[in-house]
Amino acid sequence: MNISHISDEDRNLIVNIFAGDSDSIHIFWNCEKGYIIGLCGNLFPCEINDPFEYIRKTDWIEDSSRSAFDVLCSQIEEGIMKSIDRNSIAVDIPMKLPGESVYALKHIFVLFLRNESGKIISAHINIRSYSEKETQEREIVHLFTSDKAPQLFGQRVARMMEKNADRNIAFIQFDVERFKLINDTYGVEVGDQLLKFFNDSLSVICSDDKPFMRLTADVFMIITVFDDENEILEFIHKLDSMLRGYMGIDYRLVYGVAIAEDRTLHTRRHGDNATLARQSVKGNALNNIGFYNGSLKTALYHQQSIEDDMTRAMINNEFVMFLQPKFSISSGKIIGAEALTRWFHSEKGLIPPDEFIPIFEKNGFILKLDQLIWEKACKKIRQWIDSGIEPVPISVNISREYLHSFDVAGKFSELIKKYDIPIKLLEAEITESVDAEDTSGVVRQMKKIGFTMLMDDFGSGYSSLNMLKTTPFDVLKIDRNFLSEFMESDRGRKIIAHTISMSQDIGLDIIAEGVETNEQAQFLSMCGCDAAQGFYYSKPVSAEEFDRRLLEVNN
Image (cartoon, rainbow, N blue to C red; front, top):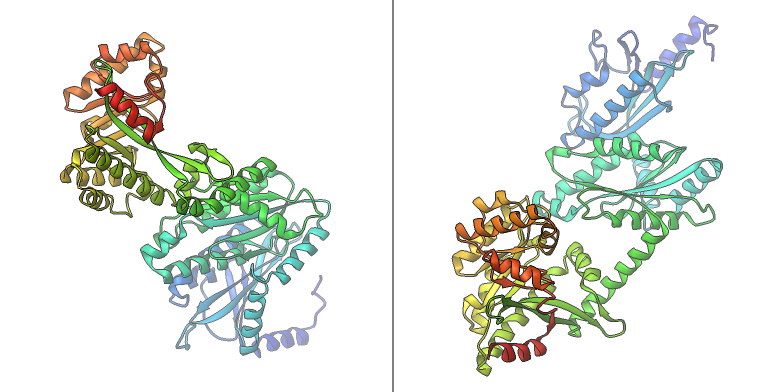
């Protein structure tokens, strides 16, 4: 629009209109030449060339909202330096301007002005307070754009999809992994501030063509148009960099993406698909972005079925302890057992451990299951003693997921006292990892009490020879894959032999898992490892079958 024909009188009228707006502050910023013209108050010195940089250095912004204001500034800077499609940016932030006694919610609206080539050269900045009526209306809008009453948001998304009928549309969800841990560590107030930061930042980052809403708890959803899937990843990476590190808190965001291929589906269905995609990468250390597809839906429905049944299964005693014997290679006698879990579902029959253990580790139910098996193992040892059967040690697994939050040593001590069994007969297995601080602390505490500690799966994943110099464990369990893979070459055999020799030289006992052939057993014996566990000797068996074999083999 050409405004060169406007008279001086009209120009003065426009200035007077802005100056008469006592509820707002108007700033005209020539960002290309670096100066501002302020109306309605003298908030800024005449010589400043960047009003937002000036505000950063004041106490006008409430501390909890400074990060959201930084996001606003970065978006404005990106618009000026690189240009963006949007013609305006807005955000609601608590501010206390000079002359005000308390922080109050202010609406900051920035309208960009471009030259003929489309480059942003100036901006109109409007800062104003909300009236009481506007505050009430704002609360109503928030109510009806929540997951519990998404009428307005659903209508907005439907209009957006209709408007962009010839373009691709993606539903993107994200949440904070283990958000409860933030509330527990820093307090609920800080958790609420973090969610407010997300909401304020999204109001800056998103636009009419990229609507967003906060779903329940810490879950947010954004709907965006795109031409190529790489645009989705670029947007998520940019979003992730802006939303991370609030107040120095270390947290991880997890994203789920559902592409709206079937436009006949209700918008809520697309949101549900994004939820499935988000849940699929929970606990995945290598990937925090999941994409929805049909097989994912099947897998997550199966997960939901497992979770629906787990509590009932615990009440109905469907989780059964099996024992896998540990043998002496030289004598052929049973020298111990590892307690394992089998789930005999009342309707579905036997559910393999690899179908439910990973799910329980993610949702925390593994703690209840572990404690159940610990107690069953102690009962079995007590039963052997009462029946006059020479007992052998039973090792039970301790999942690393809760080492930092559960008194493992206290629980084990309680069980030993409850069943009045020798402490040497209940052993504990933990898988070592790079992040060994929690593990080492628990292991040392358990050893101080008198328990024998086994490092499970040595030679796989994160464990290495470097750990041997500082490990607090008593026994190394050689991983089945380490054994089978290294047995295939002379060099591999030498590595196994030296690992066994070196471990024993520093006082560590060795037991080999996954022994499946006589060749493996004889090789281990030649290397000085006399303890073995695996299908060559026995698969895991019921407690009753183990009793029969124990009497048969050891008498």
